[in-house]
Image (cartoon, rainbow, N blue to C red; front, side, top):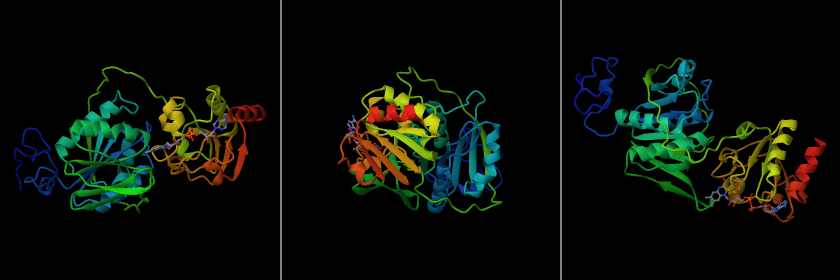
Length: 349
Ligand SMILES: Cc1cc2nc3c(=O)[nH]c(=O)nc-3n(C[C@H](O)[C@H](O)[C@H](O)COP(=O)(O)OP(=O)(O)OC[C@H]3O[C@@H](n4cnc5c(N)ncnc54)[C@H](O)[C@@H]3O)c2cc1C
């Protein structure tokens, strides 16, 4: 196949064959609406460092894809340093999205750019890590593409281009397996679900630099700005707050204590729901999975959905109820008032 046709999704004018690398167009099956390819969102920070959860996701995408693996990364020039690493983990074509005015995560802008890219390359599936950013981004993309989204998957398989997505349901008691007849199929995947693959050093891929436009929200109703010290995923010590905290000043006390002992601050969903802590600090099934050496839980009951995200070596629980479920998994259970004990520990730290 040498000429581009009107159904080509790579260009707008139907004449891209002269601009594509030789042989690339032949990989497209122009007779079908959707390709067999998988697009993976490459989350990176402002220094261009790729989020660790992306590597396992790429390994899975490579394993189940019956076509190519695309990546889409938003980064400045420093993003180039990641090309070889990303190719070695299985990316065939990396779209490096560039806009010099964008320095940080912008969900509406990124969603618009990914939706626009998806309409051009028509992947069968779009995979995104279920990090706080990924969880915000994925539904926006799904809405723009008028497709479905299976959130927080813990298993992915494929039959040809059809994605078979599994995730916990009914409070984690069963695993629901979900298939959809809408394309692109979209899934967010809980970080750490898939092991990192072995890199194939020297593997080649194509990087395409692509500009994108900033999309401004019509109106900002509220902003959930993560407080410093909420990098809970990698924290060795976590001070975690639950609904048993009655005084709002205890949140401030927890951050002050965290600063003194080199900890980070996390919370249960009940406290994030109250708006006392940012959603990005939530531990559990619908929050983050954490694996600190020490987890100090103030006023947290230990609901199964909370414990689903907790892989601590040791838990110390402060709870006024000696029979609170968390005490059954705690290394030490202190029975007492959470606000008062936190205040007293801070005084002595
Ligand atoms: C689909 C689904 C997903 C969910 N995902 C998550 C998730 O990701 N993370 C999560 O945390 N939850 C999640 N939940 C909610 C979860 O079921 C619980 O409701 C939540 O974890 C309760 O938070 P908590 O323990 O802080 O609050 P509560 O259940 O209200 O418990 C408060 C605890 O504090 C103690 N207490 C009360 N007063 C004091 C005091 N003065 N001093 C000391 N202790 C005191 C109580 O004895 C109790 O043990 C999810 C639920 C569903 C249905």
